Image (cartoon, rainbow, N blue to C red; front, side, top):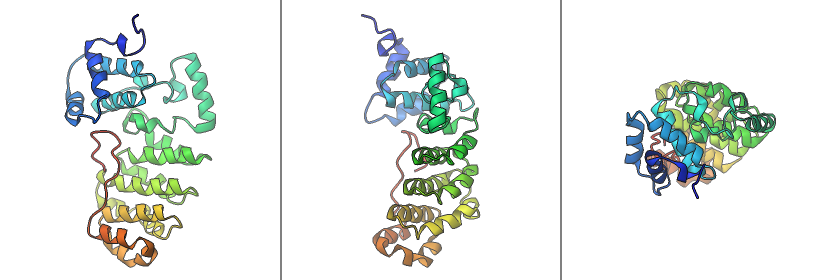
Length: 263
């Protein structure tokens, strides 16, 4: 029986892409070729993969990310309904679900960053995540920090500075890691001149060891060893970690997707 909606419905090009996106470990070279390929049918095939990947989250995420890397100015037409903003949901049922989700978990979805939403230039991702960073659910605020981390835009530093004061330990830790990731987005001196720098220093005294370590790694990655030495008394329990950071041995952040170079 023909598979009308799943992978069996794909043409040869889309089926080959689907198979490669299922491969583990990911082939970085293949993703580079996909991003650079000028085939006139490739975007259509990637969109077909997204629609066929119901129940295969990782495949859907990768196909979305490749489309955005190919053209960050594209519209949201290809985005799965369950993570697209309510105003642009396609189907009536999806619109109802999206509006319901908007009330309880924010709009766009706090997981939209996984699909590359942060890198879309056709939306105001920083504005959206800044708004979500004020949500009453910590899980939504956490999603906002993760989304801001992937914007590659130092304008995200303002909401991240506020995130370092969040009442949730996980949100504060994510905010510190996000600042560290954004060192690739512009001159380090601009980050050190921003109020977020002082927030990182204050986070060295956080009640959570995870936040203290994340802040120390961020400062180390930004080259601010002086602040780490000056505030080493706040890191007495993390002495071994501090020594590694001061020797420039900072473990990389997790990759957001196979070609992520912001770790």
